[in-house]
Image (cartoon, rainbow, N blue to C red; front, side):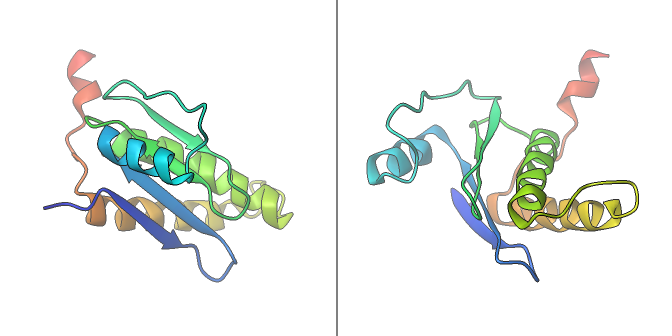
Length: 123
């Protein structure tokens, strides 16, 4: 059975990204206080990244795929750059690219997200 949440350290920085998958896990985290009380449940295929200082949370709906995860990882990493005071530019985007690849692979492996590019079926 796939895990419902995972926290990944973004080395070498003091920064972690938590990914939460399934509405049931969102409810559990909301009850424990890890997600704000005013958080509203998302559609099954939606995704969202909440800034959380050095530990943003990526919230994934039940039917979310790896491509939505990749989109939200970019948001989490831009939070990281802002948190650490590292400006983003074409001169340092390799760090962003490397960490995107690392986080998507790490989270996908733990949460077993769908790797089928379903959105391409509608083109």
